[in-house]
Amino acid sequence: MITLYTFGPYFGLPDGSPFVIKAMLLLKMAGLDYAQDRNGYGKAPKGKLPYIDDDGEKIADSTFIRLHIEKKYGFDYDLGLTDAQKATGWALEKLCEDHLYWLMIADRWFDDANFQKGPARFFDAVPAPIRPLVRALIRRKIRGGALAQGLYRHSPDQRQELAQRALTAAATLLGDQNFLFGDRPHGADATLGAFAMGALCPLFDGPVREEAEKWPNLVAYAERIRESYFA
Ligand SMILES: N[C@@H](CCC(=O)N[C@@H](CS)C(=O)NCC(=O)O)C(=O)O
Image 1 (tube, rainbow, N blue to C red):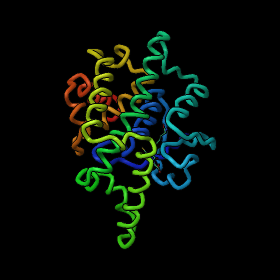
Image 2 (image 1 turned 90 degrees about the horizontal axis):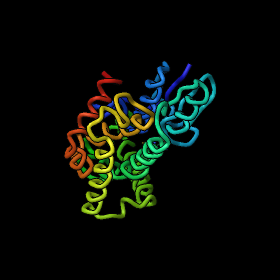
Image 3 (image 1 turned 90 degrees about the vertical axis):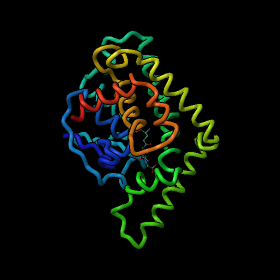
């Protein structure tokens, strides 16, 4: 029995976190049934979501969830790919996770209007008297992370330029294919699919959505992933 620890559906997306959506896609691609639990954050082995509990074994981090599924269930997410395709897929995944993600964080968390209609909702269950304080503390923590990572030190124009480069790279690699490497999805599609859905979320204004929407193939791809796995 596999339990996936999630934040829950937010913003019209299957989950508030693209990493959790990636983990959902990985499980679905491998044909594995799983239950969802929204109460795991406080016990997360690495202090972040997603993680899974697979018959008592806890695996934290979306990439290690993938490696676990490959090892334990013998599912090959890269089946049929050349070494160059595998390398391209891995590089694109890390572009999404370690670069595009932080541009999305800047748009969602530090633009006041986006924050109010978006991440602020994460705290709706916190008792009202302490809700503003908890919200402000977590926002400050996320800001510290974004400054430490470095992308939030750039000006809005510079972040727009980086978003433009990142999404151009992703959309160009996708080209006119249904999925990254042809007609069927591979492991890297779990990541690009999750991040494309997040980047295009209509709730949030900002450079990431603006740049993503310039690419009809990426827009169609995000819709294809949503329809294939979350219809
Ligand atoms: N490398 C991790 C990243 C996961 C991650 O950054 N999760 C964020 C949500 S998008 C989180 O749980 N943040 C909570 C925190 O930092 O306290 C993965 O691939 O799973």
